[in-house]
Length: 375
Ligand SMILES: Cc1cc2nc3c(=O)[nH]c(=O)nc-3n(C[C@H](O)[C@H](O)[C@H](O)COP(=O)(O)OP(=O)(O)OC[C@H]3O[C@@H](n4cnc5c(N)ncnc54)[C@H](O)[C@@H]3O)c2cc1C
Figure 1 (cartoon, helix red, strand yellow):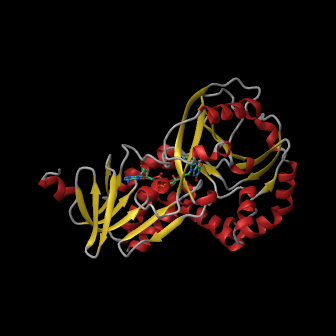
Figure 2 (cartoon, helix red, strand yellow):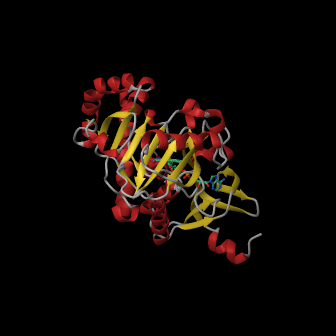
Figure 3 (tube, helix red, strand yellow):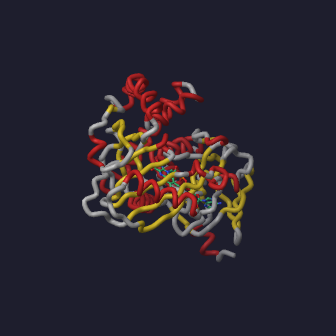
């Protein structure tokens, strides 16, 4: 139960309440603050830190590798696919405009899609369509987005990976630093953030939204639900599936040659350097149904697979040790659809969820759209 002081100070006259303190929740709050300099904005996060994807991701500033875009074109129209790439690109620029390179630990080291031995068909399919992709994406990136490049691959020391396409516009961020500074910016902009409070359910009524937690209830004028892969617990009718993603990071490796962000197997594996360590994630395709969970855990199957990818392909002749493994929870649509779900549920309640695997790029844009719909 709250004291008079607590309810007066934190929970009375709240204009906008945002559930979820990840990238999208914070972006929604920052966009609302731009529009309403004097409003009361409250972000409620159930974890002591954001506890989904935003502080656990791999930190790729990426907008779609060639084979991922071609894959999307199998089921979506050209307009839809290229608009999605544009939104990712403009979303990242918005995030960057708030924080700047330094506070994000942003490095423009570029990216690569790489092809393992045995993937010649995939590589040649991508090659034949590269010109079409570059023409279609030119208005977004201002130059060729993808370059054939089999020469730089040799410098990384990989084994059984002979072909690559370079993606010069890609970069990498320090995920922890970015979220730390986004939270700091929200505080500077007089946005209240409460951690350790889980919203259990809510009632939408003509005079506002009544919010229920385990210990107390409160009323706000408008509510944004930015809970990504956990969306179904508050909105069970939404088509959002949790998708666990596991990663590992090595201990520092002297003289590490790998630099940049790398996509492998149509994005099912991804790795990058973090200074002189390698961060590697993926393998979800090995156990789709088991990984269709919102439980933060790691499994032997996937961690063993990631270790074998390091050993057999990425660091075949470099001694290395694993420092840490972890997982995060993403949100996808049914059949792994990557379509972001932004929906007005009433005039007082909007959700922005189901960010898929490229939320760093598109997240700020989603926040902007949610804020616009709420205002
Ligand atoms: C391992 C991994 C690697 C990734 N790599 C990349 C990458 O390299 N590049 C990229 O662009 N994207 C990447 N992503 C995806 C990206 O991190 C996400 O798309 C993005 O962070 C989603 O942000 P969000 O705010 O929507 O969700 P989240 O960060 O999951 O935030 C939702 C928050 O809501 C909170 N919450 C849930 N329910 C409640 C409730 N009832 N009450 C209160 N709070 C609640 C959760 O605790 C959580 O903190 C990766 C994701 C993972 C897991």
